[in-house]
Length: 134
Image 1 (cartoon, rainbow, N blue to C red):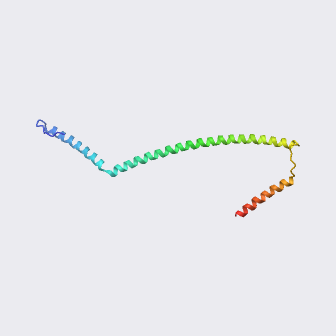
Image 2: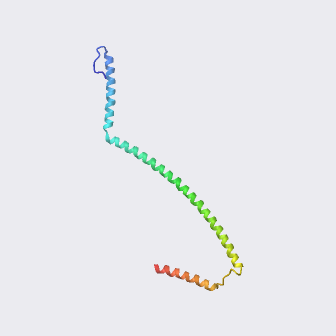
């Protein structure tokens, strides 16, 4: 914007200068009004914050999902390995039991009736114990 008038400018040039000055002034007023509109600025900032928060939450959910799947796979593989170990131990134990049954020196004389009575006694204690708690 010029502060001194140039007498050599024609009327059309002056009008063009006035139009340019008005446009620049209008843009300045709009910028100041936008800066002064706190409510709109807060609303825009809130919207941006909400978008960032949603994006972070989705990213965290994805990471959690991946970690959960990895943990499930690890747990499954460990369970399968433990099952294999248990199966091997059961086979070994069954082999030693069958050897003990076949070898008369390894048998212990335990009457079947005493064993059955002990099992029945334990079962009775469990049943009566559960009823007493009620």
